[in-house]
Image (cartoon, rainbow, N blue to C red):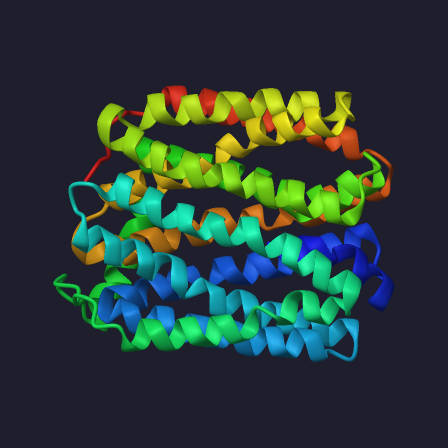
Length: 366
């Protein structure tokens, strides 16, 4: 989430348009998506801690390439490597937590995802300050040593080992093919569609929200970065609550309750310009951050232990790779002067997600 903060700097440094900047973010998310299927299969067969540690080291190395890139081509290639490195982490985290907290996965995943939002709250304003005071490279490069430290800590920490049976290569391939069959069932198919639309909205919104606040709403870059960080700060509260709600009242009610305020926020965003109104609108939109704790808990509960990683890998790869088109599409819309209309379109798509949720069965299929 530091990338959206430095998009205006990258546009100047490399002569990028909003559409090309959107393509850059799409490249990040696309490669972060396509790597999740092999990442899920690896999580079924190998130690999750090793995968998570490897992921942090690859991302740190990729960020080193980003900040030293000599051309837009190198910048795009480094971003692709960054996405591939990132893709190893999410499913290994979910399967690891699923094994440790099998009866309370929603709560555990909600708390863990909320800690990520603490970083996404704090880091964007720091990035904005460093980019303004030093250079855009400092605004993103400062994260690299922390990633390396995190990788070392993950590898060295004596965490409990997963007791799930590790599948053989042939079993993993068979499980993967079986997951594609599962996508045709109403519960998995609809949830995959919901996850795709949600990720499309989330990636489109986060890619350009700071730029929108600066160019359309007239905020300073520092104020825009703080407001962007506030979006994730609310997520620190929303995600644990969403995960707990999934455990207690089920998927359908918890997901509808999370998404309704976000629809209102997207509709109001083009209409109001005052900073304090924008704070309230940002809080409304940020309730959608609880979606991941619900949808991914539901999906994790839908697959057996043996194929959980492969199942999550297939679903997340299919949904996230398609959703990666969001930033470039939104960038093209913004380049043509339709920023506000783009957010109204996101409100309509979110309303569609709520409609699909109402059709969903409330119990994860296994």
